Image (tube, rainbow, N blue to C red):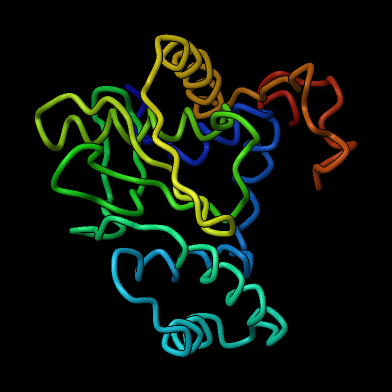
Length: 222
């Protein structure tokens, strides 16, 4: 097994296009304000959400945040207040799978099934969950299964802006997708350069125009 563990976040990004992952590896991730807000709200789910307290925490975490985001924060809290949430027993648990060579940090952990949930700062699809979220659930479940010593069959996905949580049970197609994507990323770890997928969302990609066909390994660039 390659010594570099593959983050579950990379697996999820590679579902849309592995070339995006290739370029992202050399560019530091900048946390969007929407994510900062939704993430902090998630710490308060399962109890009373004190609006002023949450906003103060957000401003401490991200001192340069635009104050106009306070209305976005209020809207997210309004949506979440209309639902019942389980209280997490633990937050931000780092997990890994030595067998599969992957790792990541799970947002919320519970003592009963489903054992974890993922915090999202987007609205849910009309039906089901996205392929990227399916692979997130699978990746974290594989890691948590090794830690707990028992099978983890699914997880909840908490869409904070909509105040909705959807449970997803892992399907065989997810494991097939996982093996395919992991192979691409493992090859990238060895110096390979991935190919653009047929349905890559190029129109919204910051690296548009930089991934046309060319060398297939990093060594080919030199």
